[in-house]
Figure 1 (cartoon, rainbow over the protein chains, first blue to last red):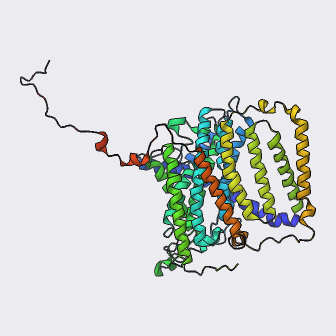
Figure 2 (figure 1 turned 45 degrees about the vertical axis):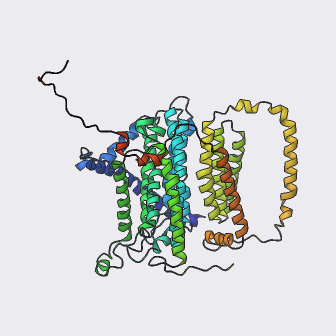
Figure 3 (figure 1 turned 90 degrees about the horizontal axis):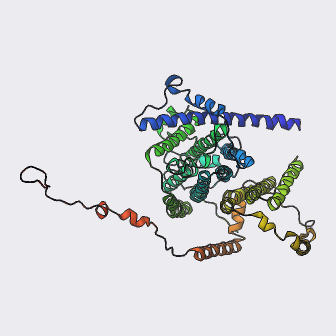
Length: 350
Length: 202
């Protein structure tokens, strides 16, 4: 018993704490990056007062939120009101257990990794729905209803996009999916699965309730939607969850479509050996940052969607596109169309 | 160790299931149902049926119960009306419940399955998704396809029953996209009017 504790439990708890701490740091600086990037897109400078070039801004924001009073509205449902932020942040952190950071740098290398991520992220909607209901406020309730319908709709499109990846790679294990993309930058799945990458990423923006799909918040229509009654640290938890989900989706996109920790110079004679010393972790983080930048870029560029347009995009455009591309991928896989699907498909005899 | 974990999960599952039917607030009942599904998924995980466990969470917790919650939150159910006549129907209800339990025990009792004769099936080696998929599409392909056809028929039936041509004024995005600026706005060319003597007209 004691042996098990020292051999398995303690190192794993250490790893979990390390991942969560680094993730929280990344979330803090993502908020700064967001304000800076959107600032420059809109010809402003962004926050530059706290610390050199505004670098301590996230810490100041965090301290401010920590010291604010948490107000519980009268006639709200106290237990659920407190539980909602917890249910929002829980799945956002739990999904990180299976993310591969490098060839052997993964906390839990499980067989059904992709399914696990999909199942855990599908639970993040509960935080929003319960927050909206427990607040006993009409605006919050409208935000919750909008979010529930939107997230369930886009989950289907996202699921289909991931089915395409799983047909192409023949595995649900995230590390195996990365290894299946080995070869060169042209072997990564962004090229054969380009429509699915677009469907996946846009559905991801909708799942995290980010602009232009932020119907759950919609400041101009329903004040702030589901978190209108929250203040202080409870409010901050919703933001932590949203940003952690953004980073997760970006890293998942990098893993599934952009070759994860593989070097982009693979297969190019001179550059490959020149960049061989760079660890895989750097590549995966660079690719993640690329997707994160697109998140911010989209927010700064597009106005908010109308609700019926969101539903139309999800059901009538994304789901059919993903379904057609799954069939195309399956045909390519069966007939060994190269350079991606040249490995022999296992023939099944009943 | 595994036994302790199993009893923990089983206790939570029973507690959640009891709360689903006893708690007064329907939203809380739905949330306890979420807990019940999640705990049964954990028990399946302990049986190394990871595909089934994760699918249970993905389908039931992630989608079905969200829609369930969606509907329950919109309705303002007054539980006092539902509880009316509880004592009056209690004897009859108890009788029906006892009958159902007896029938279930007779049909589903442990003896009928011959648990002693059949050894406990081994969990699949490696990925149990692969094994399950292979079985579904080879040995059980006909039942599987028939089930999916029945489900599709149910979906089509549900939609045709509820879909009525709406009399409301709705937007047609296909038409909205086709609109050009000339359909909405007409620019009229006209000569500028200037009075001859340079003063504004009365």
